[in-house]
Length: 226
Ligand SMILES: *Cc1c(COP(=O)(O)O)cnc(C)c1O
Picture 1 (spheres, rainbow, N blue to C red):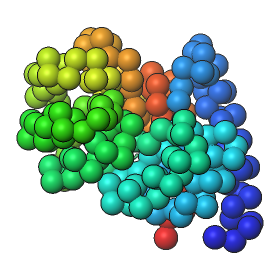
Picture 2: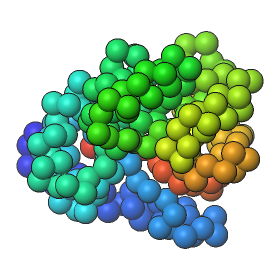
Picture 3: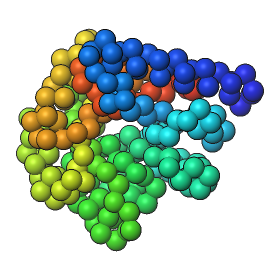
C-alpha cells in the first residue's frame, strides 16, 4: 500500500469516529455506547497497523484463514486488540475460528453451535458469540430465519450462558434498513442480550439511531475493496 493510502486511513478513522459520535448524540445516546469494528478484510496488515496507530482496537474479518494469516502477529504487538469474525462459518472452520477470534458474530444454525461448543471445550479460548439473524429472510443469505430466531437464541443461551452476548444482522441491500434494525434491537432486549451488531459503511448512522452497540465499517475506512 502506498503512503497516501495509509495516511488516508488515519483521516478516515477520525471522520468515522466523528460521525458515530454525532449519530449517537442525535439519538440521545452516549457515543461511548457504540463500538466501531473496523472491517479489514482484503486489506493488508499495514492497513490494520495504520488503524491501530490511531487507537482503533476492534477489527472484523470475514474469512478465518485470512484472519489467521494477519492477526496473530498483530495481536503480539497489540495484546488488547479484539478480532471479530463476521463472515459465514463452515463447521470445519469452528476450531480455527475459536483459536483466532475474540468475538464470533455469525452463529446461525444448530450444527455450527455444536461445532463451536465442541471447539471451545477443547481450546483454552472462549470467544464471545453473537447469533446472526437473517432479518430479511433472504434465501441467499446466512443467518437464522426470523421465525426460528427466538428458539435458537434461547437454545444458545442455555448452552453458552453469558457467552452468548448479542445479535448481528445484515439487512437486505435494497429498501429501508431501519425496520430491520428495530427488529434486531428489540429481539436483543427481549432476550437480555447487550450487543447489537448492525450497520456498515452505507448505513451505520441509521443503525446507531436504531440501537446498534457495534457498527462494522470497512470501505469507509480502508477504501473500496478491489
Ligand atoms: C464487509 C462487511 C462489512 C463492512 O462493509 P462496508 O460496506 O465495507 O463497510 C460489514 N459486515 C459484514 C458482515 C461484512 O461482510
